[in-house]
Structures are given as structure tokens and as C-alpha cells.
Length: 334
Image (cartoon, rainbow, N blue to C red; front, side):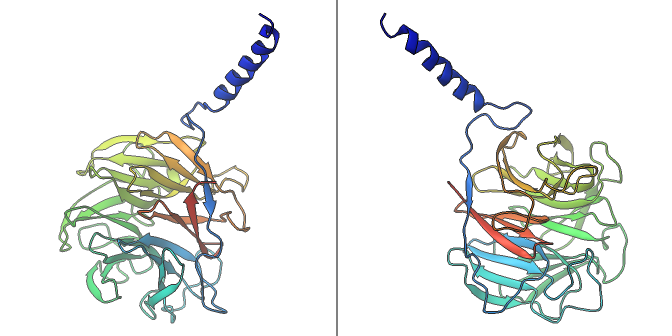
């Protein structure tokens, strides 16, 4: 065969390229699709500067709600000197990035998490006041859980609640994690049902429960920030598994997209690690990492301290950056 000398190196090159796309340790088994930054999103009014962005969520109308601390200083935690006088909840058009509504002035002291439910209500956690609020899409207060300023771990009180996930039947799960170490479940009307968890590093134990999300089957995904892992539970709080690896980093937030994948933001604050770990990950529901992008920094497309993550029905990924004081939008594709 005349071309046998050329064919062998070519075959070896093809094989090498195929092998290079396969990773071990739960990283990726196929070339990642990649995500790109949508520049110029959102479109803020002239001279407007975001404060610490602690929460982000997307409703069924593709409205993106951003929960931020407006004029609070950039120190963590910010100096607490009363309620924030400016609007803390901003509503943007997911497509154009235009600001379409804002509310929440004088209503919060230390905003943390925000979640849109199936009826487009907003569930908000107030870390300093140890409370959870339900608001209408337009900003009308509908329900309050917890007693302002009272820290406890029972059916009527919280200890630094961080986030909320809402089930199909309207029941809610609260990640109660800055002072407590538990997940608490309530009915749609706010009746306490049960809770689980305690301080520790074993299965079903937590060290700073920072976010909670649900998949289509009702399984509960908890960002166990201090333990650098995501734990997965049944709807009744029974431990199923955990995701923990150097590649996953230290998850600060998790969201389940309509595509059935989990999206995780690694805050990058691992102990004894260089300050370059902040990144975003796409993970299947077995814990295998399918894609990852972004890096630590304050340039466009980078994240400083990624604090929350949300996914739109169109596949857009939104990341709230608490120290970078911004929210960024990423879309699939190069």
C-alpha cells in the first residue's frame, strides 16, 4: 500500500484527539458546548451602580429579578446601619436587559436570596432579620415566615436563612444555614412540616447551608458551602448522595435548569487554595461535570465571588457576583 506510511500517523493523531476529549474524575466525557458572555446585559440607567448582588432568579415571563444591597459597602458582611433606603429588587427583561421595574426600598437590612415560584411570586430571605417573605410579582407582601430579629431553630423561627426552593405543589424548602444548620419544609400557606440537618460533615449534616434547589422529581439539592459539596435528598429529607470533588470546588449556589441539568457556581473561597477558583459548572444529576467556564477576576465574563445562579427557559445562565457587584448573563455556544 503506497499510503500506509502516511495513514498510520494520521490514525494516531485522530486517536489522540478523541482521547483528549475524555476526562476522568467526573469532569467531562465530551467536548463542552461552551458558554459566552452576553455583553451589555443588563442595561442599567445612566449612572446607576449595583450594590452587592446576593440573589438572582428568572420567572416564567423571562423577567430576571436581581436582589442587591444597593449602597452597602463592599466589605463582607456589610456594615449594618438600618434598612436600605433604595430599591433592592430590580426586574430586568431577560432578552433586552432593560430595567422594567424596581421595588423593595426601606424593606430589607441584609438581602440574601430570591426565588420565583411557578405563579411568579418572589420568595425572599432576609439574613439579618431571620425571616422569609413571599411577595407578588409587583412587590406586594403576601406572607411572612419567622419573627423579626429572633434567632431560633424551630417551626416559627430561623437562623440566617439563605434561600428558598418551591415545589410543584407550592410547598417550600428553606436553606436555614448561617446560624442554623438545617433545611426546613413548609406548606404553601406557611405551615411548618418538618426539618432535617445539624452541624457537621457527615451525610445529612451541614456547615453553612447556602442554597437549595429542586429537580422535576422533587429531589432536593443543597449547596453545603462550608463542607465544599452538594448533598442530594429525597423530598422527605432522606440522604441520597453527595457531589464533592476538587473540580466542583466550594459550591455557593445550585440551580436546576429546565433541561434537567444542575448549574453550580463555585465561590472560590476554599481554604489553602489560590484565589482563582471561582467558576461556573454544568453538571448532570449524577454529579458528572459536563462543562465549566469563567474564572476568578473582575473583567467581563469573570466572577469575583459568585453568590447565586439562575437558569432561564432559553438556557441563559445568570450569575450574581456579590463582591464584583454585578450580574452577568451567559448563553450556550461559542
